[in-house]
Image (cartoon, rainbow, N blue to C red; front, top):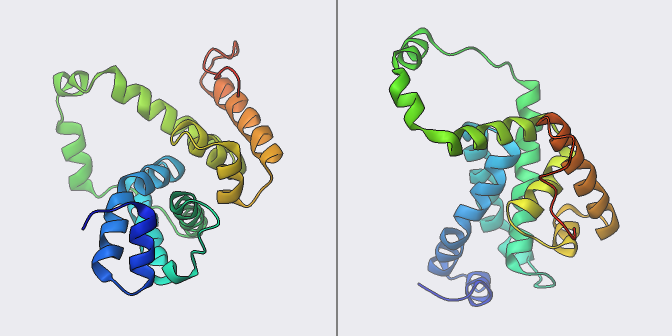
Length: 191
């Protein structure tokens, strides 16, 4: 089933399960991308994405259309991810089992080099993002990864647009410091 988010939402709210499925599938990649950047690892991102999709499915009737569906979905995903991060802090993190460590060590250096600079850069950025406090990480990810405007981010995080702007600026400055870029070369102009 194809259609715009708005059409799919109306149909899903009317009880059309195929429309709900199509809506969730159409937005999965973006929801996962938010969760992946916020969580910093695939396992937690997958858990948070699953929770977000379940919440969207259960609460689709509560979506009132005052914002774009994607804004509402990002808010649900962000909240699911932040909840997952809070749960992660409360549970122990065991090391890798011995057989997984051996497999990791068995990867030869030529394979590692073949992954390329883009993967390395992405991992460095993911690691730097994880060092940011949640209050800065979420706005930076929503702005720089998803290209959301300040009003959408404010609606997603339930904060004022001025606060969004401040948190993005502080988050980017902290990222620049973490990445060793004191000159601010990675800052976006006009933001």
